[in-house]
Image 1 (tube, rainbow, N blue to C red):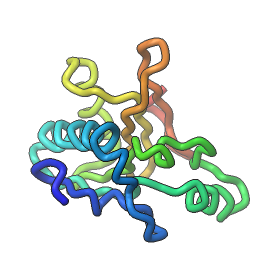
Image 2 (tube, one colour):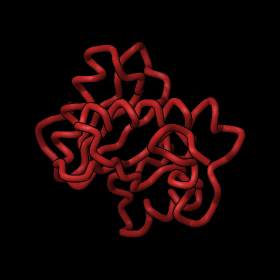
Image 3 (cartoon, rainbow, N blue to C red):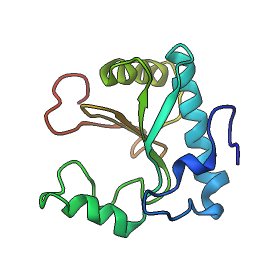
Image 4 (spheres, one colour):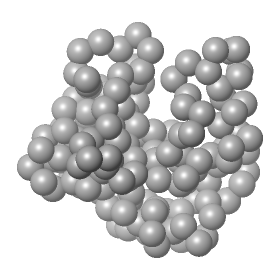
Length: 147
């Protein structure tokens, strides 16, 4: 099912085979896809690949425990709530995609609540901003761009 010009609901299904919850599509997934469309446009129209979308709590916990540390995987991840995507943009470094996303956000052209920078991707989510502030962080081993 197409949600926007470049994103389908199928791209956001959990990697364990669980479908994205249909009752969340309008309230959570459509705003996320709108944000991803804006990021795609800011990145010169390059394809945006969804590396991880919705995750069941069980699948998320498996990621946390796969190396025994849970490094980089939040226990209460926005992925579990269907509000997040880890993305990579074809032909661009994650730091450049992150910078383009921050620029859009700063210009008021992007409604997001969380932004993380990792070695191979960025995390984008549409959670409610606490106190009006964007949640920002860097993944393990990433220095610089986020705070």
